[in-house]
Image 1 (cartoon, helix red, strand yellow):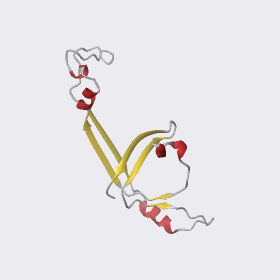
Image 2 (cartoon, rainbow, N blue to C red):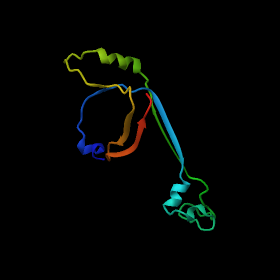
Image 3 (cartoon, rainbow, N blue to C red):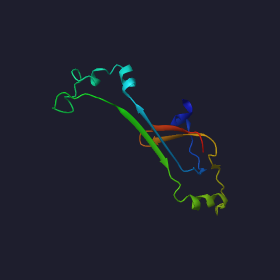
Image 4 (cartoon, one colour):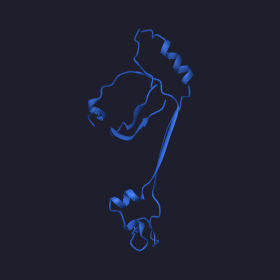
Length: 123
C-alpha cells in the first residue's frame, strides 16, 4: 500500500493526544502452518529439530502467536494543557485527537520496517 511507504511520507510536527488503550490478540497457528505445508514438524516420527537440540523425538504440539500493544497516558494531564498554550514563537501546531477509529503502525526506524499495525476501533 503506497501510503504506508516511508518515502511517500513527509515529516510534519503535530500535537498527538492518544487515549490510553491496550490491545491484545492471540492466534493458534497450527492450521495456518499446516496450510503452508509445514506438516512434519507436528508429527513425532517425522519432525527434525536436530539443529536445535541433540535430544531426539522433539515435535511441535502447539504454536501460538500473541501480540500486545499498550499506549499509556502517563503525564496526559500536563500534556493535555499544551493544546491551549501558545508557543513564544507563535507557531501553533496542528493536533490529532483520535476520538474516532484509527489505524496505527509501529515502525523500526533503523530499517524502515513496519513491525506492527493495528486498528483501534472504539475510542
